[in-house]
Image (tube, rainbow, N blue to C red; front, side, top):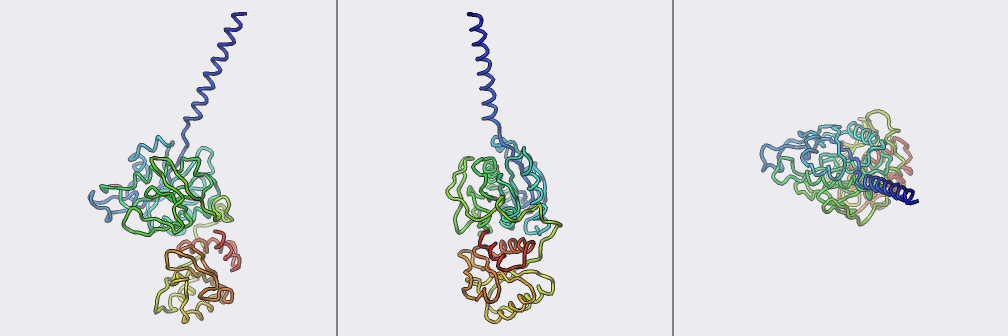
Length: 359
């Protein structure tokens, strides 16, 4: 009897050790995060350590970026992919689609828990918003950049990259849409833009940050309410080719002429985003030009050159009467992207306006 009890105790002890080891393995298992590098200032290099504003972008490869911040391996199992090596002002729709397809393939993999995209800050907001519209996933996607090159005395890239990996590795980041991480702050891709071209606190949103990261821990304070990622009606899998419908932006000011608008029409532009003064205002001497373009099939989107606020429909101009669309609170560059995606599905202005309300 004593022998049976001893064997039973040994069996339970062995089982307990096994379960403890299994539990520890599960608890200690790190998430897998892939860094998709596209170039930009975060991969830039200056001639001297004191050069924080004059440098060459897109010089440092992804493996060097990762190795420069070895602490990120404590947060996740990190590997890198070099998607592009380009200054972000040179990114076109072709490159946007390339990045989106690469990210899309990554998030479909069971062994990828999150994705970080390193990107130049000049058009970082456009890429982040585009991914927010076309990638169907709840996995964290974080777009990160820097305002100073990696060679500068006080380079902000390493800490930004560390925080971005922490954010992509966190289960709390799931289902929140594509995120932008800069200068300790967590932003929604939809409503965040570059507002300063020198300082490290370059990005901001009129609606505020979603949260921040302190010593690799995310702290959340709000969530976005607009449709994104897995709730979006747009899907990168359904977009063919390497281009989008041609949409261009015109900038509002005093003393404008119809020349640019007519030239865009001749060039085959499908829609114009008018970055108007104030409430997306259109000067009275351009109304006839806009209506002529609209009657010819071109979409007219009223946005604003003003950073904050939003364009009110049927204020300043009778949008219903003219069959124009307002961009709501999306800035001109984001309005351009949403318009281009909308035109892959419809030319009905009421449908396009619905999309601007919902996204």
